[in-house]
Image (cartoon, rainbow, N blue to C red; front, side, top):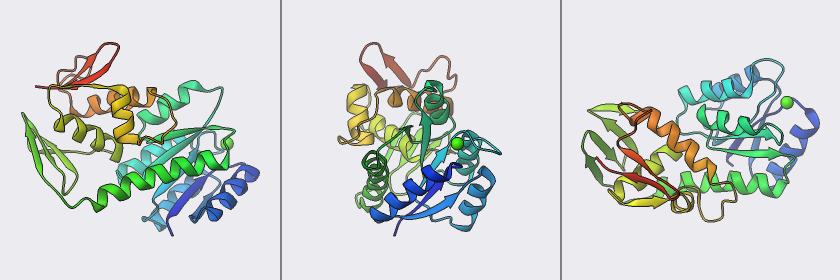
Length: 229
Ligand code: CA
């Protein structure tokens, strides 16, 4: 069974999530504080997806996300955000989350998001055709799912890697935000287009020489993004 970390300090919400995860065939691992979550991750490095509440009694969910990411670049991370805190979504994604779910959420919505993340990771593991793409200083290896810039490894999340691969498979072609969302997050994903922009912003910080003046990933106004040298 796939392990899912549930970090939530409110017992009622946590129990509700845990019951529904079990019903959907996942193995929930519970944590009520940020510190507890980090130690559970240490004990269970095979956790597939982490659900992180933001407002916690000790360290906040963003910091937990940052610390998990530093050790587990490929773990799926979903932030549980409050409806009123719009900025949380962007902050969460910038600290390395793959997705967010707004409270209050239905069990169906939450499991759909977890299923989508697991499917994306699983599909990619099963891919047998591997190849290298070299573009300027960049070298993408699809077997190891790694990216190097000038021979140095760039640490990417699953989502960032998928976006880079899509770009490098389609050089000098404008890709719409909808295309990127469908390819990277899946057609059944019912989140917002903004998630694409936030991930691109994060990716630029990692790969551009000057992220404030991007030259590799350029914006195609009113449409999407383009990869080129
Ligand atoms: Ca909370």
